Image (cartoon, one colour):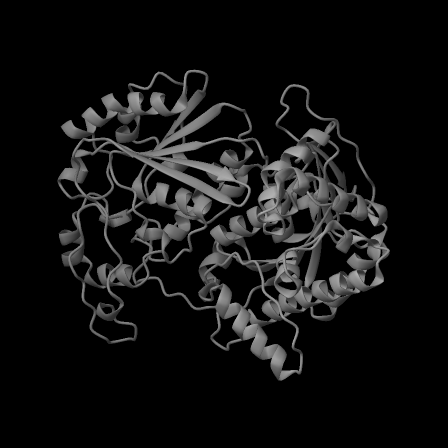
Length: 574
């Protein structure tokens, strides 16, 4: 829930916002909790507090009566949203935009990032001095405006394409394909402007399933630029509304000079704009660029767009959040996610439980104990963790409520937390069976899972899609984790760790169920501004191989009545 002084603000209340502003004081007891100032309607309901737990529990439980394999039909998005970034350079706009796009993609929405800087570099090259951003230079100002409008047109066209049935899916396109298609459209209308886009791709959403899980699904474009004047923002909003696109602004403000310099050093001097440039000169030039933008910069204000502007302001990396006229599910999801973001350097460790007795006997699910080899892994796990943590680093261990994860963690002398959300995917009526038994008892389901493993739901159990939504509170807590030199080790299960890994590495849903997460291996992930570094540490302790490669497309029937080759499913491939 959101607390503003002595009042509790629910997510429902955010959707009835006007312009009566409350003030909020930063928490003294918990510095990680951001201060929140909300413009809200005093008549709005104060019920239904919105925590990560309440959000997670609102999703429907898996349908027990699944007499037929789940059938998915594409549907038009119920919401088209342009999320427009605002802020001076080196304020983390691109970092925030990428994070939001990745989060929405992971949840199953369609999301893409349109970075105006990438358009500029493609059109006029990377070697542009800070003087190119001088607002008094009319020629350069005109060029920057033209490129911003090209990016805006591409964004609006992409949002329109997502509601058509032309068979072109944004998630199926790579960077070059998107460029080629948009270039062809421009050529057909006698527009020859060169362009490109910075893309976060997502599979086409599965309408009924996602609509059931979240209430609606959305198509969200992240428009990443400074958008630093009221005039520019008004133009963007007008263009979007003409095309039936909702608009939300997200401004990043930073008043901490140390944070700004850290961002310049870590990100900007290694960006394409300063390739092969001396770091000292790059920093000096970029600081001049910032000064040019400061000359015309206008912060977001509730009076913009005839007092109808929807926005969220993040001040000093989310230490304070100001929210205005936030309405509806997708607006609220974005704000809730932004409140959990931070830029503290940190690493996360993931490991499956040690080999279990069910692994050895090729059975799925259950709550079995570790095998002898699994117990050996548990004994050696503290050594490999300590070698990579260092003496000064703290560690908290998260496990599921199942015995095999708790037994794996028993020799680790660190605080431990049990998460019900980290339990393995629920295999329903198939729990405790081998794959040979499943194929014999439920042949249609056995084949259907090969056809669409992410969306297939076990009878009386869960699908990978269900599991993603169950794990959302875990992801938000990982994003919120801010303590320096304090790592988290998740000891989990194959399907669960696939979902968490896919979030951080931005792996599409189609590939998620086939991510390799071997037994007796520790994975270290270190989030960075533009991606995530990965290291793997395998212990020399044998274990069964539970990974199953994706079945060949040619062996899976794609039309009703076609023959489907079931193939041989390796043991415990979840």
